[in-house]
Length: 264
Image (cartoon, rainbow, N blue to C red; front, side, top):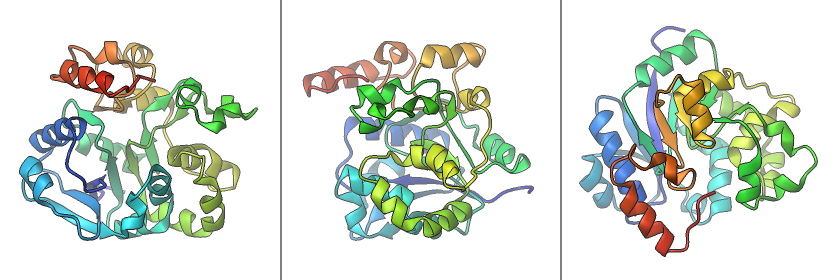
């Protein structure tokens, strides 16, 4: 495939922007304004707060039920409607509101995905320990170690929407059961493979130059001391690592700490 079609897709619950989302979206609007950027929003969302930060946004609307809880959001990322709505593109870049982009590498990565016929890329997971910190029941299962050295995190990820829609339709009953406790990216990157749905991905060492999430010092070393295209979850992981690398995070970390938020 040459010259793949693509868009940035930002699912968002439609409430006023907090400081994390505001920093994320302002940065993306500044660096990525030449790319098509589409928000996935609940039907009836007032676009004014997003327009104030991002300019006149493009949006596609979905059942508000997908945005009412964390579990509902997980189901949204596993269900057919999200991917069907963007099946007019070869690839989509999922961009959650806790992403910070360092420079615009989108053309490079989209072409890389197409040239290698990959379906997915996200930040690598070098081990499963983040599940324990997040108090996810998956961490208590005997096979959780199989998540080690995998690609990877869904919060900032490139996906093949047509393939994902097809797999989601085929496994809808299973997905509904798993969504109660399985993070959507673990479904796509691990469990789907076990149920006979191969999703092609690059090696974790390549993904480390695409994005960081956990174990950022290791990612930095593997990436030759360079920051990646973007980081996902900087507000939850490795606070000391990101101080001095992302402008404004000291104030946000202080704010989060006062709210009782603890880094994973």
